[in-house]
Image (cartoon, rainbow, N blue to C red; front, side, top):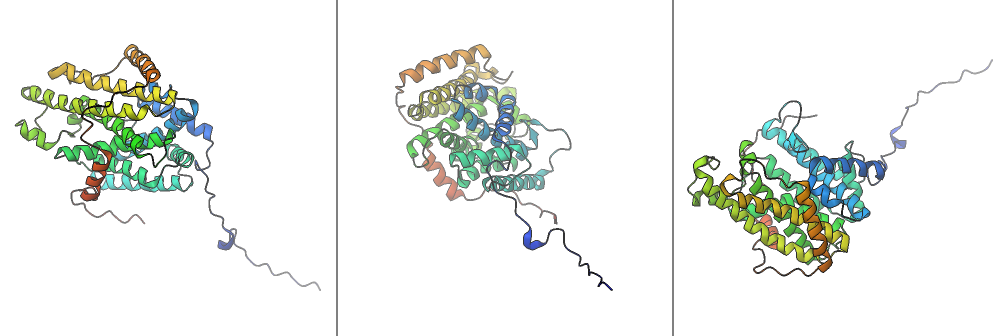
Length: 363
């Protein structure tokens, strides 16, 4: 009589043979697919950046798109938006919701650095460009701190606070973009000038968007400036304060021009096509700031925009500027420097936030 075989139940996937997800740049997505999604993101999110990026050689252009996609997605997640516009669905849940969104940004960014899939093409794109270009976690955290400032309702009290904000939301992006374009991480002088360009962009944005920011209950004019102009809290957009508002916008644009001029010194060190693209972007954003100043008290009656023909003129002018490649050194150089801002950041410590109720257990 044959012996009956004893059937022993087996685990379908015993723990000793479970395999971890293999780490690979881009989280396993194809580079072509990530680049295409990134191109769509920049085309929809920023026409000015998209126009300038087309001047890059293909390798730099694609890396710039990949980095932009991450920046755009982080900004949208932090603010509960979609390409800078209110997202469909329920409104963000106050401070607790902001904390969750920032936590998600940091976790997804860390997974991207590790080469693990994130289920989000923008973060996978960042993992790819970080691996290709040598971007660091410290660089990414400097940018994420800018999203944190916005998401937690922070506002500047002093010019030093404004400098810190402009560094995190734009200057630090300029540093990353320079590294993406091939600038060595130890080339401090060129990275400083890239930071200047980002700060110039942000100062132009702040001057242009004072009205829109007020409608969203935000204000990036330092409290000290408003006090000097004898403007009551939350009243800077009132018609009887337009003259004072125009004066403060002119202050922003004056600083913008100094940083813009300093940035040209760094652009001079780049290969021709990359230099051309940077100079074109500088001219386009500089034109935004100068138009705000030129309109004076009417600057916020309608949004300042640079049309296609004017962009084309700036791109053509940037071409000849790139050919000549002899930018004058501004005198004086910008008061805000990357080094001094970073010292202030370290002294200031973590972002100051109002007390929060503890997050509920998510387990």
